[in-house]
Image 1 (cartoon, rainbow, N blue to C red):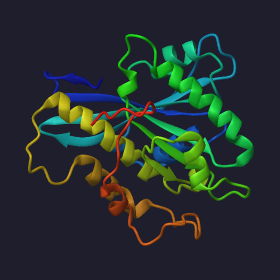
Image 2: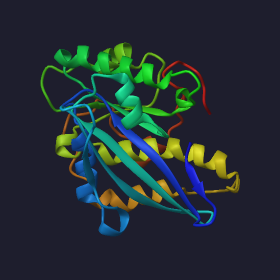
Image 3: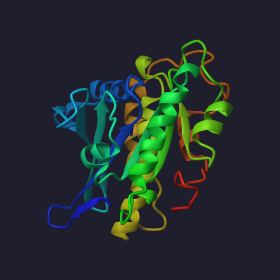
Length: 253
């Protein structure tokens, strides 16, 4: 759960970008890091993972803003490469996670690896005595600008049958990366709200929305034809009601 420090009036939460190797996890984070102003981000770190020669962690914190006098800091993590041992994945990456972005390669040839990593995530989140099954998850269907991609219906059928939140992206071109961050941050913020229990009912605009709106001017042009659903702005999509369930089909709202 989020770490709340009453003395320093700071809330720290951890968000993990999870998925197979070369699906765009690190690309997401590097795109975000390059766009953020210095005042909004901390130093990025790359650290080899002990016992795994093929993977290292990449992370950095971002300051979202203040709410009820508490500074909100989200720590973004991912693994460069992929973990073959779910115990190592749990120990190095998922421990203390407050939200997960599952990044999937939309190409048909990548589905087997997507499923393997999703099963690995499920095993890690289902460890006995853990609270991880309540961790909010957003699916990111990446590489939508490439040929030979599966339809959204097919991706949801294989990866997201319970109907969790999802977005279509091209992280390499910077399309959808900020929206993905906003979506998972808003879900994590629900946990913060329940922990603080101080938000007024009439709370109008949350710091995540303000943060994203401040970055809209830096958004790249949307790839024509990337999404089949048109006519909705990013803000409208963010505000649309979603069914929030974990990957096991249980409601956490």
